[in-house]
Amino acid sequence: MLTSRHLGEYWSFGFPTLQHSNAPKLQFHYLHPMKKHLVITADGSSSIYIPEMDEHYHSSNGAVQEALHVFLENGIKLVEAEELNIFELGFGTGLNALISLIHSSSTEEINYHSIEAYPVDNELIKDVNYCNLLGSNHQSSFDLMHSCEWEKDCDISDTFSLKKIHSKIEDYELQENFYDLVFYDAFGPRAQSELWETDILEKMYRGLKTGGKLVTYCAQGQFKRNLKALGFSVKAMPGPPGKREMTVGEK
Ligand SMILES: C[S@@+](CC[C@H](N)C(=O)[O-])C[C@H]1O[C@@H](n2cnc3c(N)ncnc32)[C@H](O)[C@@H]1O
Image 1: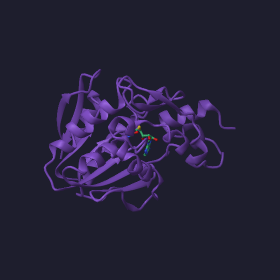
Image 2: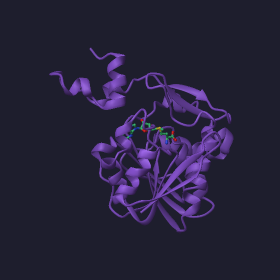
Image 3: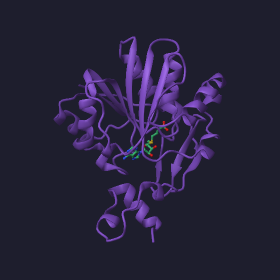
């Protein structure tokens, strides 16, 4: 029987108990019902907390504040292009997609591809308050982002198209030399160390155009050394409130 302890191991280390037993291989949707709680962060914006992992989807100092600082100010705004291709690891609540959509309407067109292995239930999403803070006129676009079909390009607005990919990143290959930006928004190395190692980061490197950038809230030393080993040039940038640094890697 699958216990909460197994679920914890699954998240931290990837199926160790299941792989080494003779039990039939379980699909991730059996593991999906891990309890998720909606919480309010310090800037008043929603986030999700997973008690079994002791992990938040965003900074508890402010989810919207963090997303704007890391992915907009140090991501989208630093790339000059009339059309931007963005790949995101971890669609989650759709916050990064929403801030990208809002930005796209004032400047460039954005093609946004986001991978998510464990989609958040609509029951939680309906109480997320991002549009109260970022503009209630975006609510219908935000709802469409969550209701649109997986694996298909969906026009959310005239300037923003979204493709949600329902897969583990381990099982997915990015289109090569295609992306201007990667939003690397996995859970932190403490919870998911394997997603910060070179096997997965190399997929991002291959997917980026030359000059393209990987942007993340994470500033861990080993992660930055892994980026350098793959050929990224790595810059530490000031982090969002409550965090000294964040990282931008350029191909
Ligand atoms: C830090 S949260 C992302 C937050 C999200 N960008 C947002 O704005 O709400 C990390 C996300 O990565 C997803 N995830 C975890 N492991 C994954 C994997 N191996 N492949 C793809 N997605 C994964 C989680 O389900 C979660 O939604």
